[in-house]
Length: 138
Image (tube, rainbow, N blue to C red; front, side, top):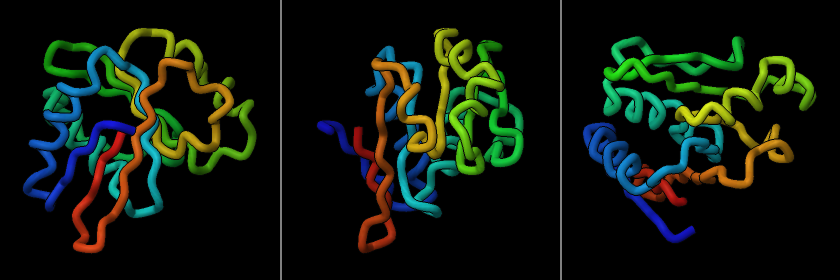
């Protein structure tokens, strides 16, 4: 991982999300790794805010996927695989069609579906640092 962005606090997260979007280039499938409470959903909310999503962004823990629309009316797909027990559950929701769509896919708990992540997936690690700031590495 050669890219790092430090998020000093919540006031700094929109800047970090904007920088991340600029630096991720053409990658549309983004796997967000991190411990419980590291900030995966909070970072996803900031990314959606920067993209102009007017809707409330929440983790799709029980629905597995939420779809949002940017200010340009482009879809953003937000996945949370924390509660799945079998890889078949990802196939059941049409995961492959979403990641092949060319639209932004933000995936929480990608460890659960690691074997079906596309080769061009951008793997992002969110870590809590000693001072409670966050490091986003990719």
